[in-house]
Image 1 (cartoon, helix red, strand yellow):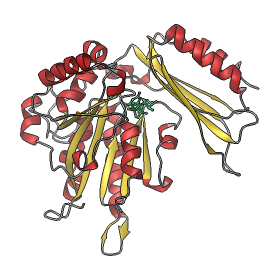
Image 2 (tube, rainbow, N blue to C red):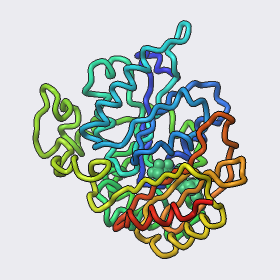
Image 3 (cartoon, rainbow, N blue to C red):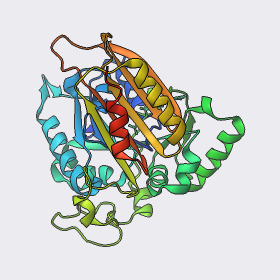
Length: 353
Ligand SMILES: Nc1nc2c(ncn2[C@@H]2O[C@H](COP(=O)(O)OP(=O)(O)OP(=O)(O)O)[C@@H](O)[C@H]2O)c(=O)[nH]1
């Protein structure tokens, strides 16, 4: 898989709005029988690690970059993580066949992709293979209306996976495709359910088209904001208020009316109470809840309860058992508009067993 011509390690960036199916695709890649070794970098929105635990596969190959503003923090983090990865070795070959970066659903993928062009060390050892955008067939139209990031993710992609086709009619799918085409006339669109695309449509594409990206953003290869040689202008991708970094528990989101609320509890929870609370909450506030997920320690249950929601669509299942020396605790993150943090915290804690 290593790009033999250049000897560089290919990098695939997965983008797509909150809940579009990035982790589902990632897990598909990691579980398929391909004999390859992938390093996975997860960039999570939220201060408690949940995504990391939802990615299958060997823990030591999953690297987490925590929240922060994409243009300011993440690029530095990404450079550090990639540089660290490059130092690892397998006899006679690089430690990994490829690197996969899953970006947060609220990110513009531009700055992440840029990293692979502006940092000399990273540039010398890696090659951006492609940017793949996952799109949620049911919710994407509303997001394209109200979210600049959602539009950027589509515009930027080399390939688009129209996921969750089971939740939309053929007419709706055709409409979505027309809209995606307008934003991005070139990227092939593949329909998928549970991100079931053949892996050769995602990995090893050699598809990143710098020329096309320079059309969208002429400053793409400009050194990073804050770095030597950076030309600070309207193209540098941080048209938000940097003073807002000090605001709120996790700085700011690019879409500043959206916030994340992280909840945790060190006592076991009553499974019935918790499920009833979550159902009610999503029923009443599902419009505003863009994304929710969590790992719950249910009293009397050896397995962890994992739940996920995108608006009102909720999935939950009992997954692997807690390890014998593992810390058992419940954690959840809600991302949305007009979230009442105090009420969420109180509701969550009231589900204690
Ligand atoms: N019905 C349906 N649900 C899906 C499909 N693909 C994924 N899901 C579900 O959608 C939810 C979100 O999927 P994820 O893969 O976690 O999405 P994500 O893009 O990684 O989410 P964030 O990392 O939070 O932005 C999960 O509950 C998935 O099980 C699909 O094709 N159909």
